[in-house]
Amino acid sequence: MYSTNGFFNHFGGKYVAEILRRPLDELEAAFKHFMSSQEFLDELHEIQRDYIGRETPLLFAPKATELLGGAKIYIKLEGLANTGAHKINNAIGQVLLAKHMGKKRIIAETGAGQHGLATAAACAKLGMDCTVYMGEVDVRRQQPNVAAMETYGAKVCAVTSGARTLKDAVNEAMRDWAAHPDDTHYVLGSALGPAPFPDIVRTFQSVIGNEVKRQCAERKIEIGAMVACVGGGSNSIGFFSPFIDEKSPRLIGAEAGGIGPNIGENASRMTGNASREGIVQGYKSRFLLDEDGQSLPTRSISAGLDYMGIGPQLAALGESGRVEFMSILDKEALEAVQFFAKNEGVLFALESAHAGAAAMKIAKQVPKDKAVIINMSGRGDKDIFITSPVFRPKEWKAFLESELERLNEEKDIHQAKLMGGNK
Ligand SMILES: *Cc1c(COP(=O)(O)O)cnc(C)c1O
Image (cartoon, rainbow, N blue to C red; front, side, top):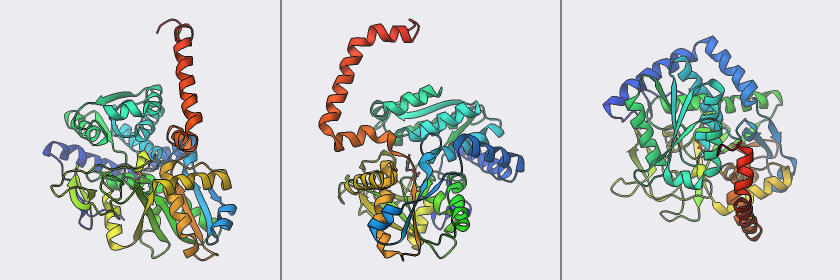
């Protein structure tokens, strides 16, 4: 299951500047050490139980099962984890590790803000100083998450280099880490990047798959297929993890098909026609690249899947055929949000809805006495700014206008009162 010297077949590796080798080697040694320390594991389990709220439920979905007319549908409710998604599993694990390593300061990159939010919360919980690098463009369009990070006490650093989005935030975080390796740990947000990050992130996320395995054994559920959405690949690899070395069940990854198959219309790294092997930001994997190896634009309605690269282990598992990949359109993801909300009372995040949509497509291929398990990586409350303009455009616009008006009118009186006259 672990990489061999940081490689999964020929994917992975540690293609970094000399200056980052030492902190990466130190991290690998510390990870191995603490993951075999009972004291560390006991502390981790206690936080997982009391702070994250584990284990998360495995919910039977009777109406979806009936309507889809095939396998029994189950939903792993990762969205019930504190902060609303699976990202907290990795953030808590890495921040706790850093604390035991004697680090004082945490840095992280974030695109849409979900990983930054999870890291900020984990740092608040564990008493660590937190700086989150975020492209200036993302800071502007992801204000709700920026506000949440600042409420948790994190410093959000707007990155003004390059295209001022996720890729530039990663570069800036790497630069910071290279300059402060002694007191700082870099919490990488998905199962990618230079070794040992893919192994570390998968290990902390495999709590999802391990719970599913136990829950299914206890309830005598026979799994036919498991479906997860794939951005960088952390929720999927953690969900699949205990099943990878077995022949069954089918493991299915749902990528962002965006609005179509053309370049710039999707983020399909395994199924798309602009997919190439390359080495980007420290690891070898499949990326959306042009002929010169430059990154191509991506597109998805779900911010968490809108990324040019995929984790190296998933690239290897896709090549070997153990994990199948499907591309799901924005439109299909939106339909899945509505389907599971109406029929099961569960509001999927747009990312997770890609897994929901993939499950809807394959349910009939799986025998009725077996289960299809969907990993609902996050809940959809955060998506109201994306889904409302689609589902109820007129009403949403009127709402935003009235909010602006209210702010302008009440600004002076109210804010002064609430902030004790300080602002
Ligand atoms: C970030 C995110 C994803 C995608 O990231 P992975 O590393 O592929 O799991 C999926 N779902 C949600 C809810 C997210 O926030």
